[in-house]
Length: 279
Image (cartoon, rainbow, N blue to C red):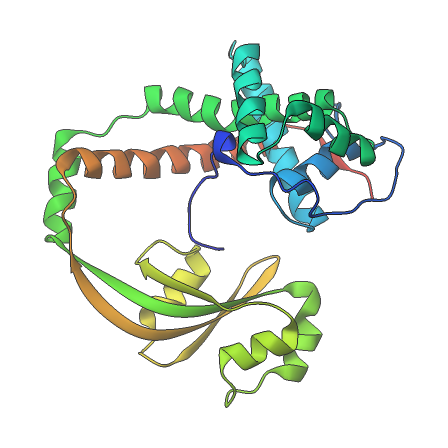
């Protein structure tokens, strides 16, 4: 999914039986300012984020470590009671007990201690960071009024079909791509699924958003970033009346500002940190 949004850690559902791993010695796979990211962290991340994309997980763990270190330096910590609550939520979401989760983790050479360490970083890097940034960011009444005028109470949405292909599968995509085929047919040949989205302007990643909104209905558009190739087709366009209150608009603008500040912070932390990834 390329729509913007942040996954709430306390609402995550871990599918413990969804992935299978070989038994590995817990080794260092990366380090951030000499603090290690372990193989067990990667395995836990693949479970938590429900993905087998190892590269994506390592990148997310590096980001979390950068933010975790920054927040610790600001004196922020995660209360152990909050981690306990997160564990109980995970158990309830999976209709199981902590003892059963511990047994499943043990099959993958993981422990509840590994999970607690993972959750501590995840909670601080997401909820902790948002709480900090929301205290620093402000949305004025004038900004809310201006946003209401800009929108004119009507929002334009586009219904699109979207195919996302990893760069490593580029050669395969070139072989199966045919502009006469539907995206469903291309997706089936690639072994992936077509996403169907209803999006407003600015809700997709920038390179894709630009192409989707300058294209005509029924056209195929292409975009790419460092890791993926995107093929989208605009199926239809509609206008919907905005019924958001001033407070809802304020929270929406606040979320955008927080996300922008987070991106700026991460960029600064990367420039001033020593990051090493071990293959």
